[in-house]
Image 1 (spheres, rainbow, N blue to C red):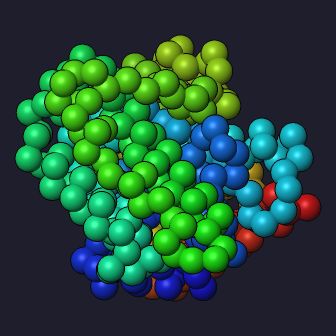
Image 2: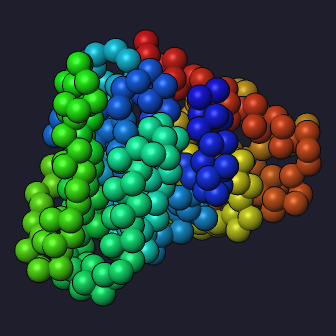
Length: 333
Ligand SMILES: [Zn+2]
C-alpha cells in the first residue's frame, strides 16, 4: 500500500517513471530514514529513488552498482546482511543521470518533508548548480568512472548528518544545524578539481562483455572479487539453444529494482506458473526476465506483448505477486 501511495505522490510531482530500491518504502513507512549501517547508503538515500530503465537487460556498457542494506524494522543477522547485500541498484554515470537523481531526491524530500523544507530547497539549489556547471561535472566524469557515485554519496552523507541533527533536536527546531545542507563547498570542490570521496566497499563496478548482464550482476555477490569476469555468450542449459530476447516485454512483468531473475523467480513456485495452453505453461523467463532460448520447451509462449491475452496477463500478474510474497516470507522467516 505504501508503495502505491508513494508512486502516486511521485506521479503528482510529474515523476511517473520512478522506481524504488526494494525495501525502501517499508523502511520509510516505519520512519526509518537514517542509514541502517552508518557506512553505506540505505533507506532515505538518493540511491534508492531512480528513474525506471527501459530494459534492465539491455546495458551495453560497464556500470556501477551500490548494494543497499535493507532493514525492514528488525535487527539483521549476519545472513540477512549477506542476503540484503544482493539488493543492488544501478547508478547512472553521466551528468544527466546525476541531475535526474538529484531531482528525484528533491521530490522525495518534498513528499516527506514538504515544499518548504530546507532540504527540499537545498536539493533544488544543488540541481541548478549542477545544470549551471555541467561542463565541470562532465570533465570530472571523464576522468573518474566513479565520480557520479562519489558525488551522490557525498550529498547523501550530508543529508544523513542533517537527519541526525534533526533527531537530536528534542527541544526546538533551532537546534538543527541547517548549515550542513549548504552544498556550496561540495560544488566548489568540483569546480576547483579538488573533490574527493572514498566509497565504501558496497559500491562496485560491473564490467560488461556479453549480453548476460543480469547473471553477471547476481554472480557478483556482495561486491567482492567476482566482477569483471563477464560470461561467454549465453547458451541454454543443454548448451544447444541460442539466446533470444523478448523485444516487447510487458512493463508489468518486468523485474523491479533490487529483484533479479535467479533469486526472485527462477525455480520459485513453478507449479503456480500460469498455463499457456493445455500442454505448456507460460515461459516465465521470457515474460519476466525478458529473454530465453530458442529451444525452450515453452517456446510457443514466447510471444510479443500484444499477443498476451487479458486473462493470461492477469494470471501472470497474480503469479508475480505470489512469488514476491513467497520471497518476502522467506526473508522474514
Ligand atoms: Zn522460454
